Length: 273
Image 1 (cartoon, one colour):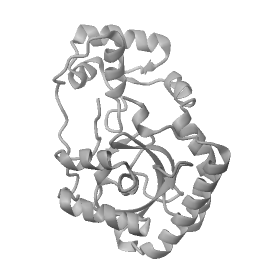
Image 2: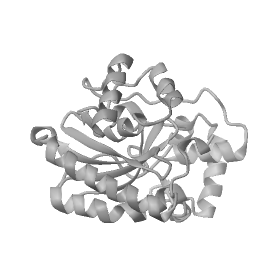
Image 3: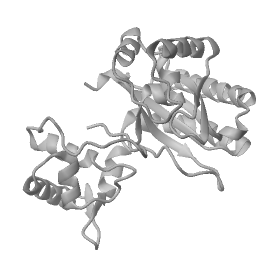
Image 4: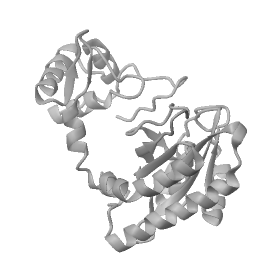
């Protein structure tokens, strides 16, 4: 279940497809937790997943016993530490984070803007690391957040260099709008993707939040594919992108060079089916 936790975006009250296995149901329950729903009651979980209340109660109890969920004193549940311990072994994010963090720290200290790292999973951008300088706006995206590729600068940076079938699949579907500035016209997006390929730089101008602009560059794996991206988030009023583009490109080249010499730490986004 994919959910985009942004203000103004309607949420499904129930799911059309009822998961058949216990594993599918457990994953649906875990997937119901997001930025806007970090703590939930059993009733809220049942409503948001479309699962019967009794089923939700039973599976939540089992997830709590295992440490995947934790129960608060007020009866609400949140994601447990056990999940973070398991997620820390995910090779597609951990290896990349280890390589990228020194470059991200340099960017953060030089620009004093938030720095974000993401990977592409099929047709979504998943944020796997962020550095937010003291005093900067601490809004979005959170680590673990997912967004459609067309609405984020990192998503466009990765989509521009994705296989043609991925690009066509994204552009053929109804494209979600987050703000009045979100680009949803397929032909215009094709032009923007061509521009990203030419410049090696993607700009998300108030695509998700009307106060901010994101500037992003792709990170290339040893096989030449862009499976990750790096971005800076800056206030719209301060959007002097040219020097930021130079710094981002330099960081991307450094990360890509380490990945090239250190082995492929980024399994392809299509490996998960």
